[in-house]
Length: 276
Image 1 (cartoon, helix red, strand yellow):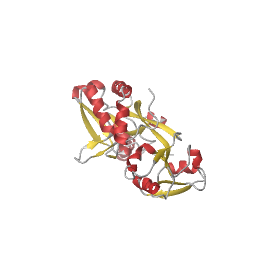
Image 2 (cartoon, helix red, strand yellow; image 1 turned 90 degrees about the vertical axis):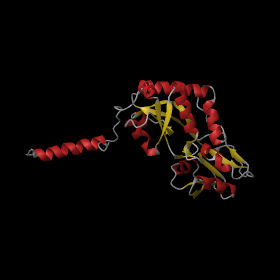
Image 3 (cartoon, one colour; image 1 turned 90 degrees about the horizontal axis):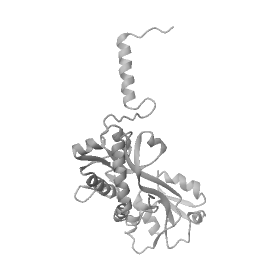
Image 4 (spheres, rainbow, N blue to C red; image 1 turned 30 degrees about the vertical axis):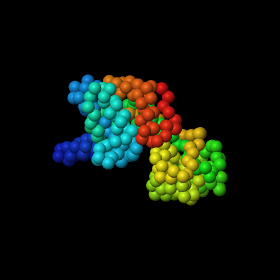
């Protein structure tokens, strides 16, 4: 037979359980929209708080003047202007995007926030802002028209150590050799030096490194392996702000602004453009 706990001990347990629940330690993260600001409050305050990753060029990073710049920053500025408010950029690391939204520390989150069923349970999304596409970068030394042409033992693919896309390579092109390097720029350098033949990755993020090797003929194969969509995240249930951002984002797509900003920062058109 269980004896009742002493009153002081019972109180301690209640406090501990409550703390764990608030931190999301019991049964996963807890989404709270208590502090989410609807559109009316954003306009009344005159400030739109947007989370961007400060270490994610060319999406967003600190430039030569120590100010945040990049594709996400330009998009956030355009949205704030359309809403008639000032923009406040909030440095938000990848792991902080969802927690900052659910805690009400930001009104919207950028930073390549991929739309997934799991995240949809915690936050709401606008229409897609851009895509993330796994495709192939090769040089003129390689004869290939499709990523399937790379699945042979005389082809060496380059990727980064610890990158999640390495598993995809082993699944899709298991017969190709694999060279692992330490960073994004190293992957392109390995290809320029002839140590690797091709790279399968989100190629849009790597084009800027090819500028260091102007004598190499770079080529992107036309058939993507995998495409995912990234949207702008807002707190769950914040429908007025989500709808307003969605409407303005749709205009930015329709008039070509998103495409122009992408090409400005990436140097190439989006591999798979967003379909309205």
